[in-house]
Image (cartoon, rainbow, N blue to C red; front, side, top):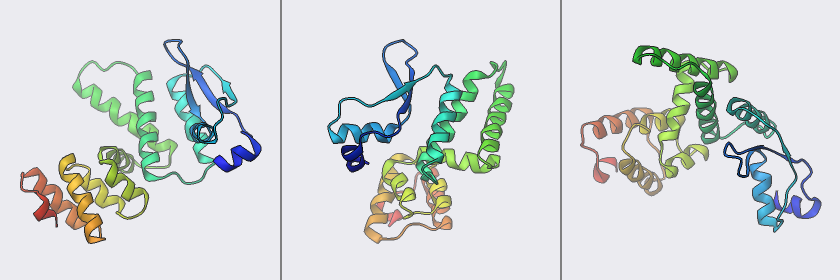
Length: 197
């Protein structure tokens, strides 16, 4: 991207919206181009500025990312979370916990429908947001399976970091059965570096 920007400039403007407080702008689409401009030493980049609701902004971001091909699991997890939050902010205020749970489930189903995913798959992707960065990178790099990663996401961050170190040391990642066992041991307070290895 940087080489292309140095040679040709920015061919397609980014998309931004005014900040809610009126001070500045929020990039909706074009984060990579913006970062590429910074690395190329450019101080300015063309943007189209448009008023958008949170939900409209998230949908634009999703459409922009579709042009790049299949998103990384971490990118999809963040996008699903953003969409879910945008839908929740637009919705009605729940009167009680039962209504809140029903609205939450409905929001997940709406987001899932837009991505051709069922409720469970959306919830699994959302769990990836609970992984420490060291493990999330391993999922993106296909050095750890999706389902084991979902199980490990329930483990305390301190122990997740130990698992990441063990994966690097062993040059192998846990199977789904091993990940479930690690989760169970963490829940019982019996997980430590030696047990992980």
